[in-house]
Length: 127
Image (cartoon, rainbow, N blue to C red):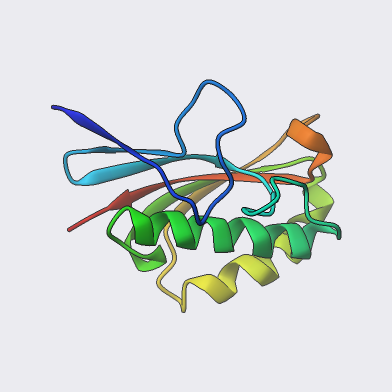
């Protein structure tokens, strides 16, 4: 199955040897998003809720540029530096799905790029 690289000017550019997203068949696989401003590439100031909001807005932009929306996301993986932040992350995250939540895994990690508190990757279907 051929793959298509998704490039969006509305989300942060890749900061390494990876693509923002890859479309394969009816699926789009989003690389992990951290709380970077898409225009400057700089980490947004603020705590877990602010970082979650920025990440969700970045995923929303990527989903649109890939031909879908957040409603098409079927799976996310969340990486948290502090699992005590889960309730604060979740309060912001749930606003983006209107009760139509994707499957999700949440993992506690010791460190993340650029000193962020959270990273989220996702899988979307275009059906």
